[in-house]
Length: 83
Image 1 (cartoon, helix red, strand yellow):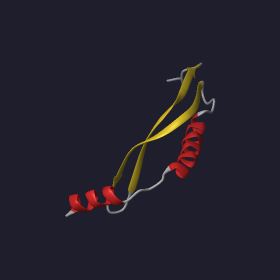
Image 2: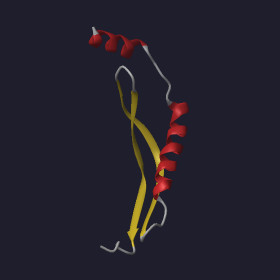
Image 3: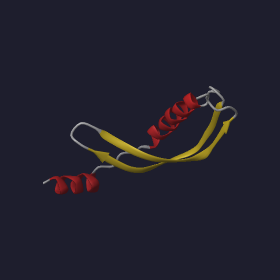
Image 4: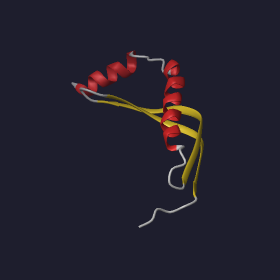
């Protein structure tokens, strides 16, 4: 039954995710910004230039939206932690 339901939804359900793309891009950028702190000799800089829907997965409790992003990430290590 599940495969038939999935096919019926795929054939008839259209969801415009464009309004969510900008919000998702901002949230991903905010998550990366948390890494962009210069802590203990490590600096990470990242910039997302585009986001694309790669897939959707779901179970009885969770809908997962899988995205691919393009951009740049640079990391610099200026000191190693003491052992």
